[in-house]
Length: 454
Image 1 (cartoon, rainbow, N blue to C red):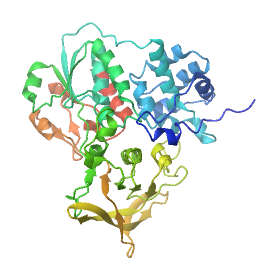
Image 2 (image 1 turned 45 degrees about the vertical axis):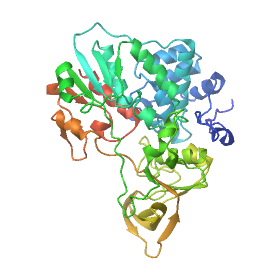
Image 3 (image 1 turned 60 degrees about the vertical axis):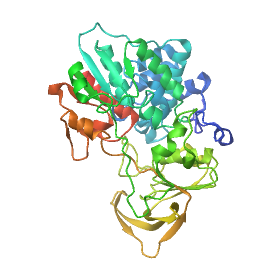
Image 4 (image 1 turned 90 degrees about the horizontal axis):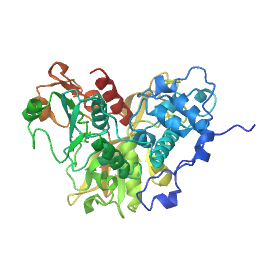
């Protein structure tokens, strides 16, 4: 019997997808996914749902159901542990796959696409219904923020019988899911579809309302028994080097805004058409900026990273089943552009008030015995100018975005500016604002854990 191989290419053709803002991944049929799910078998002790998945999804169980062709059973299984497989099935980096036992001598089982297939089949078949709320317990909760942590907390609380109101400062529900992830990774109709079910379950959403500005924190404390803060950490790390004030230097989320919302366009200054684009930062957000630049018809796009290039294969510093430190190539890098590592930005080149480039220097890294970077050292004589008409800063996120709200609620912050909750007063913090910037799946897991203790 021929051994089933993992599907390597999950994307639509490059020449097709760069011309639109539809999801880059192709849809898989049952004939594709069922054989992939069958690769999950006989691993002895599965690490995927413990060491891997923050939500503790029953990966072997739903894979077995899919392999048997029982997609309804697979949906019922994943629904025991996760509320929104349609989100994680699109944007999760699949921590479960990194801890799959097949990684020891083969390639991991294709878990994320299987998860997406299960939930999309469930929606198509009409199996997905509004969450069932317990008998009202007489308690009310205000959830501040409607990103992945806020939505997850809202549903978990509603299922326990709480009256839940979610406040969102932006015009639409979704937080990072809507305003931080491009449509070609997560179509916004997917969010709307889920929010409609939450509304049917009795969860109230109040948008375009910022607590501490449009409504006072005192009002929230007076009118709700509990407060769940799910305000994230959208404060971007900036690059405070000479010339930062130049026109044409933008933060990543500002640059991406129009890419996240179909029908809405960025101001012209954020459009990359015909421009030499330089993206500083090598993470997922930077990758999405590459994708946007290409879709808008940039003249060129270069992504630079301060850190050294990771190894091609799993580093000894991250043995299985840990998330591996290794080189990753995203959908955007297949679409075009260049990448460079070991680049330190020193100052912006400014002409007539507009950015014209960045003065950079190469850095070498002192490495640990296991191959992890420890200390950078600038290399004399490697200074150069990278010419650019548009520079995007995509160096991650830090800090709490609403220190005023934290002060109004008389809360404390950790040294890394994460909120310290105060359960004695009914105030909880979930997701990134409590734990620091991280993954969508970890934000959801945070809410699952906190609500589970109530």
